[in-house]
Length: 337
Image 1: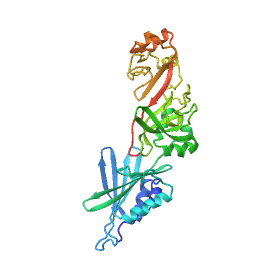
Image 2: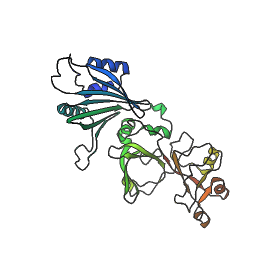
Image 3: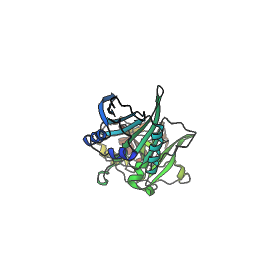
Image 4: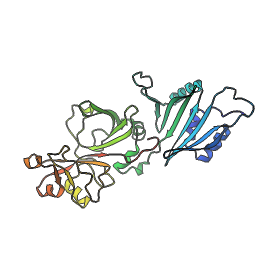
């Protein structure tokens, strides 16, 4: 009986779309067998290893292992091998299929793994040494994105957890890579969807090396982007509505009406003027978002000496507040994003 056979990149990509029963059938055909399940936190690992070869030894002395990882509705497939030749062939095969890694040849970075991306697919390629044996691992994930009819609210954009996913879905002309300046030397990589339009959204990446993993999304306001260093204009209204019913450009009166209760926010003497306090109660939950107000008539000493202001008081004084910027944060993450 032969040992478990080598798996190709094509075969692994095909397996990402298979139900578990068909996946196991194909692995059986490749002479792999299910050897159990392991857990690491919330993640379950189904382990498949080559069937024993009996008295006959594996002719190429290569050890292989296949793993299916499951976390909630997200799963990945991992293929591991001890063959350096197989590792080189596999990586070359990925590149021929259009997978890319921008920093692959950059000697100034030393990542623990190299992430190759192409459309809906990602391949996390890494090496590890166990005793005297080097293992090469290829971990694959296929992203499931919403249908066009299901993309209705700003919150739905949190599913697009990489620049590559945005380009695949919205088109290369509608998504631009950029640099965001928070101030001083604090800069991050970002992607801008529908730049300079009333549908503009800025995706701030926590994994700038791979342009993925959402730190937050920015709607409305004026932002310091490298590509717009000389642009002082901003788009007052933004067409992306949150599920809570708010959007950038909404007046304080509309926000107060929607919340059905007064809102507390930082005044002119606070570190973050206009920031709605997350503990504000009412119909709207402000805990996973920063809502920042701006005012057209707030240059007087009374406002500038106020630390906390309420919506009712501000409207009673005739102040013209509106939602300037919304910062939306992801609620949870999976194995791959």
